[in-house]
Image 1 (tube, rainbow, N blue to C red):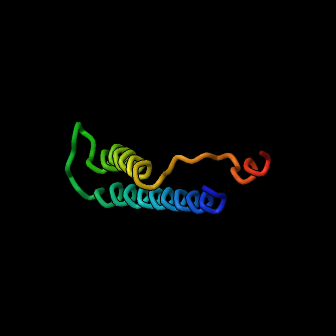
Image 2 (cartoon, rainbow, N blue to C red):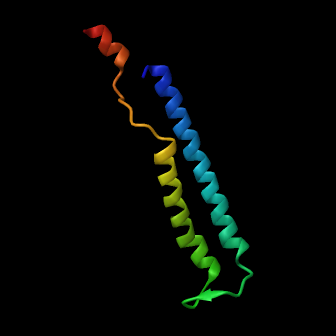
Image 3 (spheres, rainbow, N blue to C red):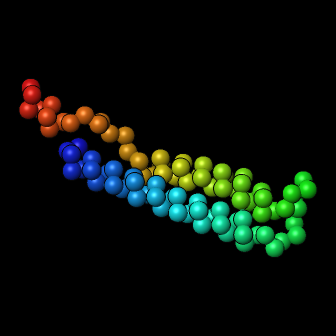
Length: 87
């Protein structure tokens, strides 16, 4: 993998991570403020508390699992072009 391909991969990973962050923020906002009007309670806490705290954690873990499975690639960070010229 040359430097340009590595750069493209890093851009892809950064963009996907940013998109996941945006999705997490939107989910947290919807879960917290969107469910604030419901009267549902679990263990004496409103549903919005559970959804905006534990729900976000579950969503984040699933999102990171998806990123590592579909987007991220294991690649060498050494400069292969310089290494080839040195030999």
